[in-house]
Image (cartoon, rainbow, N blue to C red):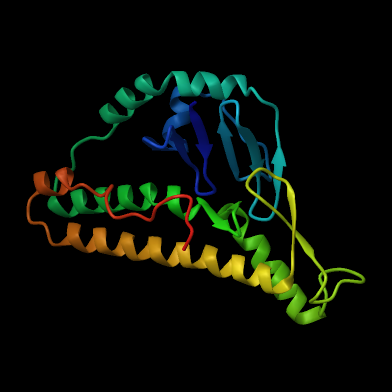
Length: 219
């Protein structure tokens, strides 16, 4: 099964192996759009198709015919994007390019899934959970009639409602934040290693695909 993702920072990811900016992807697929106000899409063939914002996710039809076509065209995109990436002229330019590649690669983990109490949740909804927990801390309830002992629903990775207490919501937020922290530490490690290199060839050959957290993340 293939996978097509459009991340909130406008990176297109196909099969978790090809990462390219939306600005390049639309040169290959000019008809591709993601309607406002939506900022991300996640399509996995025969499994799921969602799109959303930092606080919402909406189910969409399967199969996603255009997405199937994008997945099938991965070889063509890979070749075109490789040709697009002109070798940098200076060592400094090479380091900037490779460190950006590290940060793009990290999106798989920053926007990935965590497992809490045997259920997967998408970190794409982390901001929503933070907002709802902050609301509770100010108001004293999630909505009319709720208290800290009453369950509050959270959408899991398959867009199903799961009832969690305030304590459990806080633990889920902590797990998502921990994944973000661990991922950012790996980013720092790779970027520091790249900065230490002394030739363009060494920078471009640097392997930044190691040492990332295991996904889905369990803490």
